[in-house]
Image 1 (cartoon, chains in turn orange, purple):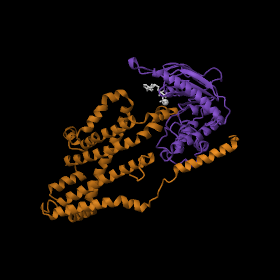
Image 2: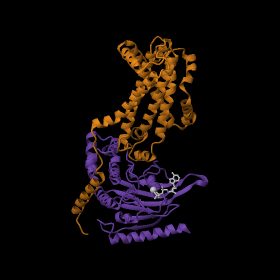
Image 3: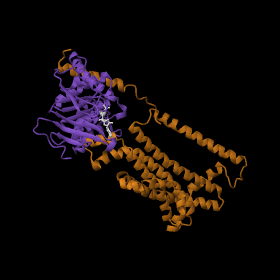
Image 4: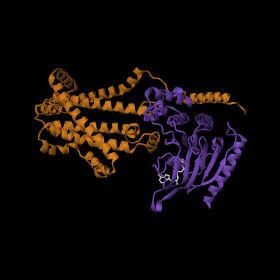
Length: 294
Length: 259
Ligand SMILES: Nc1ncnc2c1ncn2[C@@H]1O[C@H](COP(=O)(O)OP(=O)(O)OP(=O)(O)O)[C@@H](O)[C@H]1O
Ligand SMILES: [Mg+2]
């Protein structure tokens, strides 16, 4: 077994590459991009077609008169004509502006609050369970109080949106920080990360998936609160999407009502898809996504 | 913790433990994990710590690494740098690539970007992973992950390396190769190594000195020099003889608890 160091190191090198090749081999199987997109899209298209068909069947059955339940063709025509005029876009802009302002503010409050509670034992004992309690409160139940405090104004809506969204976001941050694997914390500390650096290099990235989940849930709550608010707090001059729902009902304009609902649904879906994509990207990076990609 | 990390006298010891005690919990549920452990590691020495499961080996390494405070006694380190600690699991950051992981300690030491890149490439070459820098930890095998963890720990540039059963979960073939690698890196960089294992053969293969810890409380009960010339082979008769001796003493120790 006498071998000098040179040949022994060459041997090691070859063995290591050999083992690595074995261990890494046969992993990726490339599927074309078009095929992948199609695979993800066709079930959705099929479901949409079925839903529209079912709607049309209900209309044809004569269950309700066409002036209260119009068919998809009529609503589609209404949607197109709405899209040509300024009213829908004005409403969309108003609603999205409110959503963005309320959500960004909620995210800031939620992130700071969550971080503070996660860091401090006293704060956690004091308000940790209160945040969870706030989360269980249906946001629409806040409106009477909000209207008393701020009257029928944008401020009332903003108040309820923030109360709806911020606790979810804070809870996401808290659970994210709580569940950072202790092993990674120790590793980070051993590598020289202390104080703020530990947050930057270990805690924040490790908590990211939970934070994104909290942000997603916060969005869902703020979007619902906003719609409830716009339905209740009408009479403000701007014609938000929620106000348009109320007006169209007052005017018994069913096609307008349904086409507005479709717009609201689409906005919700688009934002949800954005969060879904972020979540998926993170999971892919972390390797917690299975090979099939879902 | 200046009181427990004073530099040992002279440069004759890289790590010096004297009378180190560790108690977990308090009151009736207190566990005495380590009881008066005194131990010196000379610069450039490779020391293997062997003991039954639960005897306080990980506790000892965590104390030396400064991740926990001893309940009593002194821990001294040459220089003032923290020793690098390699955990039983790779403990890699899943959100970073292999390169990114190795780069973390360099970033924390505020090395300039160009130098960091150079060092990362060099370290990955050292552990034979030069072609895998862009991969993520989950794309690698267990042995490769441990090599990344080793590279990341080496990036600390500390003279003292603490290793907590780093190869415990690997197959024999991979482990043999990593023993060769570790021995090479240790002698090239003139590291002082405190290596924990419960594999007695592994200890005989690697160590200059083997130290046996008793269980509950952890105390040093036996210490032996291993004077087999290097490079060694894990299946050589000399290594087997040392391993047999240590195993015998370990059996006696474990048997003492059965009575
Ligand atoms: N955080 C803790 N709190 C309470 N007891 C602990 C804690 N960590 C370790 N112990 C106890 O201290 C003793 C030593 O534990 P340690 O993890 O150091 O053992 P070990 O020698 O590394 O074992 P193994 O070989 O299984 O890794 C054990 O009895 C364990 O139950
Ligand atoms: Mg252990």
